[in-house]
Amino acid sequence: MNSFIAKSARLRSTPFSERIDAYGVQSYTVYNHMLLPASFKGVVEDYEHLKKNVQIWDVSVERQVQVKGPDASNLTQLMTCRDLSKAKDHICYYAPIVDDKGKILNDPLIMKVASDTWWISISDTDVLLYAKGLAIGKNLDVEVTEPNVNPLAVQGPKSFDLMKRIFGEEILKMKFFHFNRFLFAGHKFLIARSGWSKQGGFEIYVDNDEKGLELYDALIQKGQDLNVRPGCPNLIERIEGGLLSYGNDMDIHDTPLECGLDAFVSFNPEIKYLGKTILEKQHKEGVKRCLVGLKLKMDKISITRFIPIYSGSKKIGELRSACFSPAFQCCLGIAMVDISEQNFSSTCNLSIDGREIMTEMTKLPFIK
Ligand code: THG
Image (cartoon, rainbow, N blue to C red):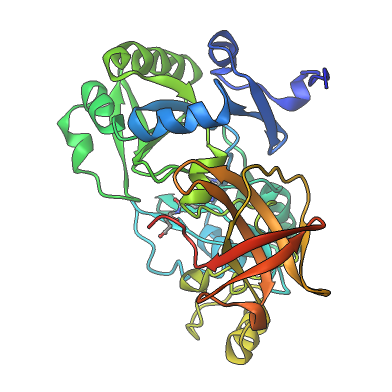
């Protein structure tokens, strides 16, 4: 297929777009109405490189929905099933946003960045519109905006060395999922020890285009001997690590309990959020389906839609993401299956897309 994406202002560029082009991005996906690189030298080569070195990712698509004002905490809590009542400045919270039916609308990181200001670092749905609608409908005293913030992720085992060279020893003291402000070129950047890989690293919330580009170039220059490269979230690495992708592994038809996100669902009587009574009922009765990992004895797979899974003639679930894993030397899949079919003790033959595949069901993540 020789098709390409026609770029326009509607597919908003980022402060780093020109660099990514120049460094030879190979493919894009679309995320929050923007282009997100999907590979540079090929998904497998990018994966091998990420596990050994350091990569700079333009993840500007991780948009910040800013909720600010006297009712900011109320509105933010109303949207998420995670208890944010004790949320501390300097800590990131993985906090699913659910609707009035307890179904997942988004699975962002949420950060309290000032006493009356929250940043919701969203996955691929229009949380801005949902928040605005709720604020208007409930007459809340808040301002909901999307500030000009473009995250840059520095990921991989050598990210610590690289970040130290630019921001000093202090940055290495920061714990996982904490954030703080660090100086570069006279500008204070909000930086978190986080990122959508299991290889370790940081996310820099770039709120100044010019200084951000200067920082991008410094990261590339100072990382030459660390074999730094531009990169992007990697399909294989994230499936092995069990990082769920909204729109792929889960969507508006699923609840956080069905997706194994129980740790992020509060049943504290003091906490009020939309969909809570439905989630309480589901928690009490138990879920009817759940996300599992599948090890599939096959050497190639590519998923562009949910693929029904049959055991004999019975449909037991659907395969939602999958890839060939060099680490496991088989295909790994993430699937939603009937709870009665959950079985971690034996292998079985499952029919996937009309092919009988020897399959082992496992808990997620594949790699701890
Ligand atoms: N960083 C930022 N924004 C984001 C993402 C990100 N927005 C979109 C998307 N990614 C949101 N989804 C996730 C999913 C998982 C994680 C982060 C964001 C994650 N999970 C850790 C894990 O599974 O090991 C820890 C979760 C926990 O224990 O709290 O990192 O990546 N800014």
